[in-house]
Image (cartoon, rainbow, N blue to C red; front, side, top):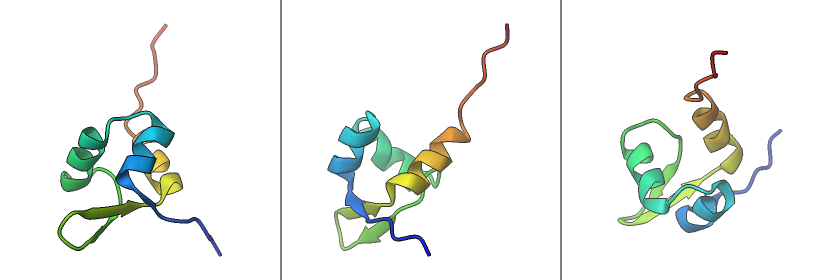
Length: 62
């Protein structure tokens, strides 16, 4: 059973190194998973967000 804790968007932005505004846009576009609690509060599981962002990684061609 996974016991990851949920964090607010501001903490996630610091942890991942992506601006909160970008994370908010990705969430509303359906590209990263999260929970919307109320009017402004967004909560995220950092591990799930990292997994989702890794799917967009482009490998270098040498």
